[in-house]
Each structure stands twice: as C-alpha cells, then as structure tokens.
Image (spheres, rainbow, N blue to C red):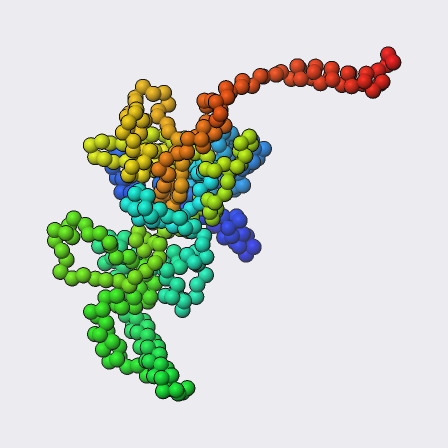
Length: 460
C-alpha cells in the first residue's frame, strides 16, 4: 500500500502544536512495577496525567466534533456530564480513534483550582509535618524560575535552576548509574580533558591578573588553552582527586548534573555501620537539591497564582480574615498504636495532618480523626484549612494543612452551603419556591396598577 504524499504545508501543520497532540508521558515508576501483579487495577487513577485531556463545546459535542480527524460516537460521548476525553491514539492501525474518559484528572484540576492555593517550592517532608519549615516561596519567583540560561552561566546560576540536562545522582539505582557511566560519561573523556584545560587556563590567568594587580601592573602574560599540556591535566587531576567537593563541582559543571545536598541526619544503617570514607559536596541553596528536581515545571500546570496573600470577600460579611476552609474526607483515622497521622482527602488529593500539639491531634471527644464509625452515612468529613502545596520530584502533589481551622471561618463556610445555623445564630430562612405563572400574574397586576396611577386606563 502506497502512502499518500503530504505537502510541505500539510507536514508543517501536522507537526505544529495547534494541530497535533503532545506525546504521552511515561507512567509512574510505581505503577509500572505493579503492572505485573494481580493487584494492579486498569481503572485506578494514576499519580499524574500521562495523556492530554481535551474537551469541546456543547453544540459541537452533539455532532461528535472534538476537533479530531473523525467524529466520535455520540452514544459514548454525549451521556457524560463531564465532556473530557483522554486521546490515546488519533489514528490507530484499525483506523479508529482510541480514547477514554479524562474526567478523573480534569475534575481534580478544577477542584484544586477552587482552593486558590499557590504552588510553593518543596521543603523537607519531616520539617513540613512538624510545622517548623513549611514551604512558602512561590515557584514563579525570578531567582528560582529561570530556563533561558546561556551555557557559560549554568554553573554560576545552579541555585536558580530547576532544569538540568544531567541526572540527579541520588535518585538513580545502581543499574541506572552504571548504564549512565557506560553510555554517557565514558565516551566523553576527551571532552572532559579539554574542559579541564580551559579550567586550568582560566585559573592561571586569574592568578596572573591578581599578581599583576598587586604589583600595580596592567599587563600580564595570558595563558591559552593550547599551551596547556596533557601532563598538566594529569597533574591537576592528581591534586583534586582527594578534594571531593572540588571534583564534584567540576564533574557537575561538565555534565550539568542536578545539585546534591548532604544528608543532615544519619540513617540507622549508617549509625550501626559507619562508612570508612566520607564524601562531601559544595553547599547549595537550590530548593530541589534534597529530593531532586521536578520532571516538568515545578507548578505542574496546576496553579499560576504567585501568592496566597489575598482576601476572600463574602457577599454578606465582607472581607474575611481567613480563606474559606474546605471539607475533607477522612480516609484513615489517626492510629494510636503506630502514632501515624490521619489520612485526609482534599480536592482529590491525599494529605496528612500535621504532627505536634494541635487541634487535629486532640485526645478529648469523639473526633472523626481518631475514631472510625462504619455506620456514618457517606463517611466522616472534617473542615480543614489548606496552607501550601508543592510538587515533589515524582510528580506528586503534597498539600500542607494548618494546625487548626478558625471557628468563625468554618461557620461562614457551612452557611454558604446551607449547613447549620448562621454565624450569629440566626435560623436559616427557607427559600419559597414561586412558579412562573404566579410571577407573571403579579407582574401584570403591577403594570395595570401603574397605568391607573398615571391616568392611562381606558375608563378614565
């Protein structure tokens, strides 16, 4: 079968972002590992979306028009109240469009955007749970969100970057690390020696410049890269071989490796079996050095708000001191045996209550965070106040909750949805349902009375 030739303009449109779907992302590593076990579910929601979700207008959906090559069946696309599809293949070998519902991630995005949370840089997991070092910096700050950087300035701006061409070594398995050395590092030995020659030449020129400056001289002999011999490079490597921080800085600059942060706490294995050799790296202030850089932009496209410093304006009570709390579903109460935190579902994401002495960990009363009630209809729910949100290196969203919820803010939130009494104890007024005929009769009566008042009645 001979394929039809495509004109240059058609080929350009096919490759453009306006007329093509982006390539799907690889699935999460945990889901790929579970795919071989029987416990894996094909309908479970993945940790992050891997395919583009599209939607269409209501009148176009009735005709099956989703902007694709061919119209989609009306029977399977018009019954859903959430017109969101995940396109797996625009034109398969069977000449059909392979699609599935994309409402799982689409609705999760809408629910998260209703929270009004800005995406912050990630912080230490342990510190954020203890409420001592929560992430408060926006990922859109100019000093940490830089992508258009020249190659010569990458090493200087390493603390202001989140995208690196090299891997994060602390997150690689031994097998991946050996493969990376064999395929990406060893073939570049000659290029690394040329890189060291340029480094040696810069250091010698800087030393000569400072010496000339001390002697009140303006001219000095500049060293070129061609004048550096191979023996000089070998001698330089011998000198820095035992200087781990300098050697790592050189290798990291050459391979553009993501920065590493030294562990502040020793593990149990390190305490029992201390290592014979310790390795140190240069200090870094990069917020992604501890857990690794993200695979996409740190915001993950979830929110483009730079700060949460805004006030909610209530239609009756005016500006509010606190943001509106949200209702969270209790997925797992706090365990007394293992002292683990309670698991809550907030806007489609699973989060934990903070540790320490706070309202979530009170021992008095029958709190749904401490006791599980299987007879409770629709499950236990509590009001929480989300404070910050961040995306880790695995693409998972972490929501940090405040230690307590303001009682007045909770009453306002309940009143908005018609749950309970008003904030000042007023009884909720029932809304009287009026039919259209009653409204028309009342409106016509008022019109006739107005005509009589102005002397427009025929009787006058």
